[in-house]
Length: 138
Image 1 (cartoon, rainbow, N blue to C red):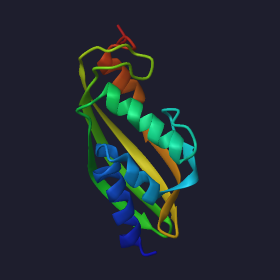
Image 2: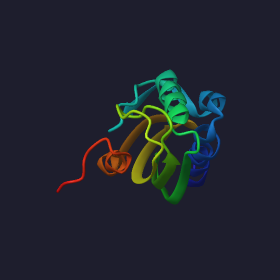
Image 3: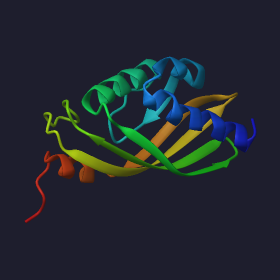
């Protein structure tokens, strides 16, 4: 697949799946895909869907804003900003009603038009501080 076709697949992930249409994940992600995540997202398509169902329940107004997207070979790299209000338990933090904004970098590996592997690096510490789950240094 071309770099532009791979970018279109990853864009659909953000524009459809991460906005709640989890059935599209069946089209975009292989069943046994490998996940390398600071958030503890389980391996496999079903693990991915379970994680995002729990995230959507905790942050129902979540927005994933694609700031940049670069593709070369079988990889697509994104720079993303995630915003939302935590109304349910998230990453061990009970509901706070607080808003947060977090940036992250994702690397997706694709094969034959499907996502087969994903790595992420995100400001999880910053998010947890904004939610009050980790106190700010004095």
